Image 1 (cartoon, rainbow, N blue to C red):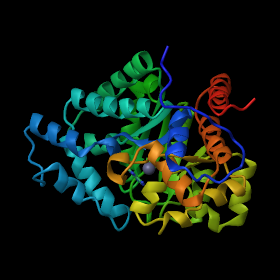
Image 2 (cartoon, rainbow, N blue to C red):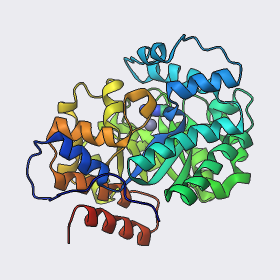
Image 3 (tube, helix red, strand yellow):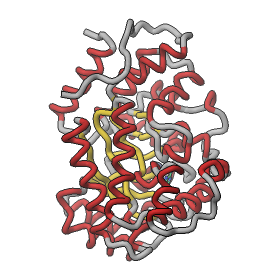
Image 4 (cartoon, rainbow, N blue to C red):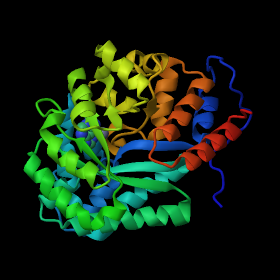
Length: 357
Ligand code: ADE
Ligand code: ZN
């Protein structure tokens, strides 16, 4: 049995504004959480990037870990993606993918993540000549160890890179078929503008027939129409980000009615200029509209924080009360791909920590 992490001292859920920020970080840490939007390549910390570059004899265009961190200033999504894809170039061997994934899972454990749905981008690696098997073997061994050693349940979601064409995505789906039992869903990420969801209609159709769950990034930089298209043409069950859905009231009504979750990533939104200031973040507004919004880290090594730092940043900027934080963790399990019984069990655990009857 896993020991509880974090201090759940005197916790109440009355709707009071939070004044003691140390207390609120303890509260956030103590809450069991599901993380539903994290790119494994986006968890590559500069220290590990350096170590893997050395192990694999790769020269990095940075002289130090500090120099890498200093380079992490992005004015938009594409700016970030250029650096993120270059960073992933240090991942060559199965052991590298294992080390990357295991490092994330240890961090998730410390932050009391009980369930993680993890994206990976196979095309980033196969395009460099890394076999699909190398990528998935390393990642999935770490997921097995997470279950056995840390008590964290996981699901793996394979993303197609939307800046590439659908033929490439179809080839990737074919490569994934022998590993069907290890991959739970398909997703869509990378450069959103100019690459609408409809471009991937056929590959999503085939993936759904093969039994994969479907999710897609939409409405991060792209318009509300892309969120609509992801629903209609890709038949996704969850939207990653979804911020710009708020521009279309009939779309919001549909998202609410169908209980389509949004996996919101506050620190990412700030770092990529999707939201100008955390005090203007739409998370509270989403919850007020009854949207099934969740908090996630996206690419924590690049955006300055893992899941708890994301919860903390919005809690502080939007003065979220404890009941709202509890609601967000409930949402994280509700919106997950877990079965109904496990969802109910995890929500009960949240309530025990928050002292809700
Ligand atoms: N790949 C990694 N992070 C991403 C993001 N925030 N948006 C689109 N693609 C991504
Ligand atoms: Zn993302």
